[in-house]
Amino acid sequence: MRSITLADGTSVAALGQGTWHMGERAANRKAEVTALRAGLDLGLTLIDTAEMYAEGGAEEVVGEAIAGRREEVFLVSKVYPHNASRRALPQACERSLKRLGVECLDLYLLHWRGSVPLADTVEAMERMRAAGKIARWGVSNLDVEDLEELGPALADCATNQVLLNLEHRGAEFDLLPFCAARRMPVMAYSPVGQGGDLLRHPALAAVARARGATPAQIALAWTLSRPLARPGVISIPKATTLAHVKENAAARDISLTAEEQAALDAAFPPPRRKRPLAML
Image 1 (cartoon, rainbow, N blue to C red):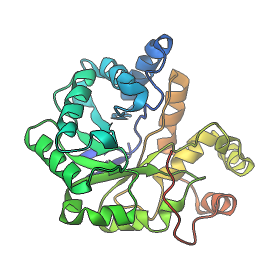
Image 2 (image 1 turned 30 degrees about the vertical axis):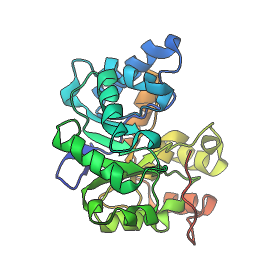
Image 3 (image 1 turned 30 degrees about the horizontal axis):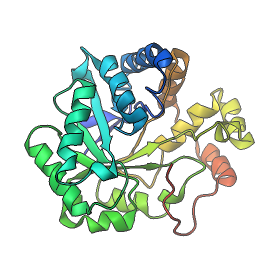
Image 4 (image 1 turned 120 degrees about the horizontal axis):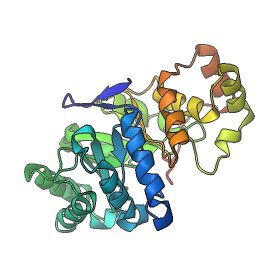
């Protein structure tokens, strides 16, 4: 079982479960809950969600999935930028806790940077931590310059969740090394891309075929093996069927060879210069 150790010594699953687009249709709810529970059974115990996803609908799905199993789960949610002020963040956090049916989040992230000063968001996060509503806080979609702006508070930032996959490698140039130097794990969202274009790429398919794996499994194994990230990358793919959950879980057992890494680098070249941080 691959795991990542956070700065406070907490061990979390390196391969978790994302929930973007869950909770959008009532007809899909049973399947989504079943998939999340199956993931827990397979050791995918980190679940990531956000108040933005289906405007709270995804949090409600997660709440149903983890009912009676809270102690198994490392639970992550995210706050809208416009709710990240000293006054609004505590209220947003309480709404998320209610939808999730829990008393405390294991990790609460600023979803992306908005107009609220980062210092105000950090102050609100620390107040919620002191109140026992969150165990730790972090950020999402922040680049190096944003992280530097946190100043001394950066030492208390548990993670930075960013877009990272074979198609979007810009974070490897400077963001991953920056986080690694501070022993801050990075969380990779959309690790297998969006819309299936990445999974249909001939080079990825060739590596998967030779390995006897699926393209998605190779794409996930790639995110988990980033050499520039220490203590490591936490990858959070979404799955809504039992077969898909099992496929994702099996990616933990794949260690890419140097030849496979080279083939993927040739098809998806690593960045040679600073790029704007990509986000979805």
